[in-house]
Figure 1 (cartoon, rainbow, N blue to C red):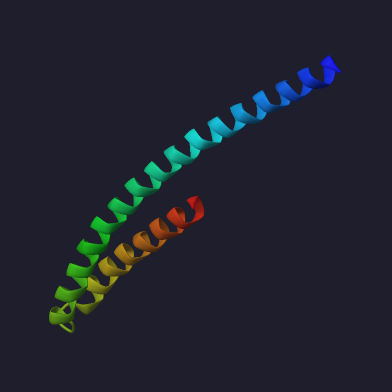
Figure 2 (cartoon, rainbow, N blue to C red):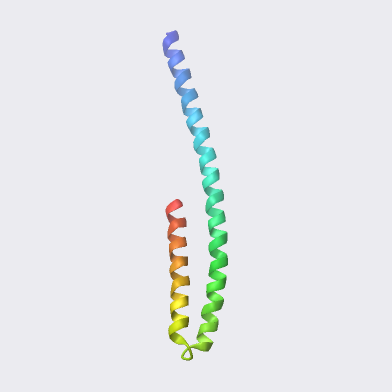
Length: 87
C-alpha cells in the first residue's frame, strides 16, 4: 500500500513540475507574441502611410512605388503568418 501512495505522490509531483514548466513557457510565448505584434503594428502603420501616399502618386512612378509597396506588404504577410503559427 505504501508503494502505491509513493507512486501516486511521485506521479503528482511530476505532473506539477510539467504543469509549472508549461506555464512558464506559455507566459514567455505570450510575451514574444506581443513583441511581434507591436513590431508588425509599426510596420502596418508605415505601410498604410506609404499606400495612402502611393494613391496620390499613382501613375507618376507607379512601377517603382508598386515594387516597394509589394515588398512591404509581403513582409507584413510573413510576419502575420509567423505570429499566427506561434498562437
